[in-house]
Length: 170
Image (tube, rainbow, N blue to C red):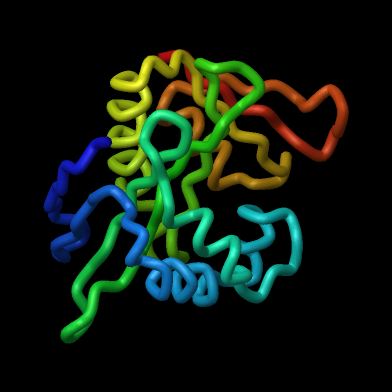
C-alpha cells in the first residue's frame, strides 16, 4: 500500500498529505462533523450531521487496490486536524473506482483538492486502475470547477437529471 507523506505549503500553512490510517477514526469523524451543511449535502446528498461508527471505520480502513484515501492535515496546537480527503472505492468494473474529494470549507478554492487528487491518481495507476469517476449533484459549482481543472469529462446522469457523472481516464 502507498505510504508516502508529503508536506506542502498552502496559504502560508504547512499541510501534510498522507494515506489515511485506521487510527484516524476520531479525526475523520470530526472532519465530517465540522463541514458546513452545504458541503455535507454535496458530499453525502443528504442532511447528514455526522458519520456512524461503521461509516467512520469503513472510511479509515483502506487496502490500497480496492479502497484508498489520502488526508490533508494541519497542526492545531498539539493535535492533527483533517482539512480534506480524497478517496476511491470500488466501481462496477475491476479497473474503475468511484472517487470523492471533500474539502473543509475554509480550504476550498485553494490548490488542496488538486494536490490530494494527484496523490490519488498516482496510487490508482500503481494499482492498475484505468478510470476514476464521481457522481455529483448538478448544482455543485465547486465540483464542476475542480473537475474541469483536473481534466475530468462531465455528462448528465441518464438515470437522474439532478446529477452529473465526472470521469477521468488514467
